[in-house]
Image (cartoon, rainbow, N blue to C red):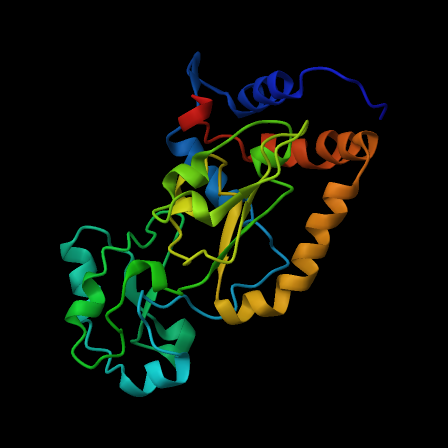
Amino acid sequence: MTYMNFTRRNLLKTSIIAGAAVMSGGGLTLVGRHADAAKEEFSGPLPDIDIGGIIRPPGALPEKEFRSKCISCGVCVNVCHVMKYDAIAPAGFKNIRNFGTPYVKDMRDFPCALCMECPKQCPTGALKKLEKERVAMGMALIDFGLCFGWNGDVCLSCSKACPMGAKIFDFYNGEWGNQPYINESCVGCGLCVKHCPLGGSAIKVVTKRQYEKVKEPYMSGLKRLQAMSNEERYNVVYGQNLPQIMARGRLVEREYR
């Protein structure tokens, strides 16, 4: 594919909307049941990187200590439900080792809002009271192959959703987009996962322990991407990434409505 110098932002947005639009009864449908189907059809972002266990609620002690103190009482689950966030659930039989203990179940639909009520109500201290800035639930990683901001457009959904603000994000602004990167100040709440406009999200939250294992290859991939020539980047974006983005683009909202 030959590199061509034209407005990538307009082409990408047009392509995404065209690929996302599904004709339904003579009308144009961009959300609804088609979005649900898209979530089921595609694997999540960064499929080669495992979450590394389960994401505990905010304020959780180190895993071994947490498990020794947690009595699976369900208070944190109930508090989260009363607050209408429904982010915390007890682990089921599929995770027998952690059965009954609390975890954040689905960051795409139910991220942690960092209201910090669950540590206040924990009767055993398994969840420690602390400021939300000191929470260490996990680390959010962007899939550069799926993120709009790394593939010719400008998207600020993740940074707008982040309760920690601009200090969590670094931007490598350039010809290929605003190129966001989540730094190690991330607390792992998952609000960026929910608010990513890509169907299925372009962000995954992993445990802090898992992040330490994958950090080196993840950063190496970032550096390789940044070192590419325009022609190499063009071939990656339009030959590999854009078809994936268009296929997942049934959920087109927020900046892309």
